[in-house]
Image 1 (tube, rainbow, N blue to C red):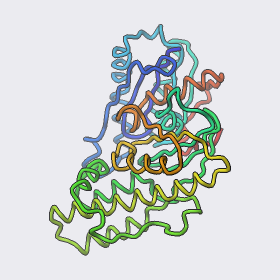
Image 2: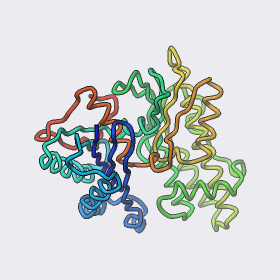
Image 3: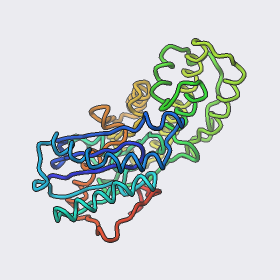
Image 4: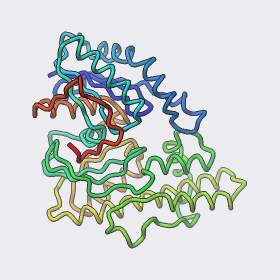
Length: 337
């Protein structure tokens, strides 16, 4: 079954072609340069860029897959979660393609895509999943593909957003998370004292980065002017506490499960961070779990291949959408039907 999948949930115009769960093409047109001047994603700019490039990205994905529209069996699109005015561009294009080739439409949850970006034939269900991205920090119970329960989530900022904001405080630009990781490699994570979020409250199964961000801002202001070594050490100190908080809450949440599954799916843009991967692997070793990460970096951040894979499983269950009633769901949770 060949599926053409579209994701315009935020600031990447992404289109992929998958055959069952095999990725034939995965094209991503990034808008980073457009949003850099604003220090973050500007929704109106994102929408216009999606509208300008969606057709050419579809064409390129089809060319890379060496596929014709007549070979496509279904169209898939991210319905949510994400930026409302960005989502609507992908949905409009998916409806147009569905009408043109008279094929079924599949609506996909963006977070389910991140969960399944790490899926392999070796994963046995039930399983657990961790999604760490710019807008989501979740621990999710996966009873089977299509059946999810959020066990822990953020109260305020997601991990990716917190890393980006810390980078901005240090004058590292946008997007900051990847730059912060590079700076942290050169610094001492114990040089500056920063508080561990929600210490002693991990059994609440919630993440919170607002207090850590506030402490970082005060520390940066106190240490100005910043030289290179200070930036390295501040980056390392923030990243250490941000990751430690994540791992501690994940550990408490996973151990609270009546029967801890063997497999842990890990997805989202932040999981491209090598230090975080190392910490997740250590946690899995401690809990006797097997971690599964996306097989390449392009599957970590927002992409359409993961949407296509999730759509394949929905198609197997006969879960198709009515193009006449399909609308964006900016706050669609993975555990909502």
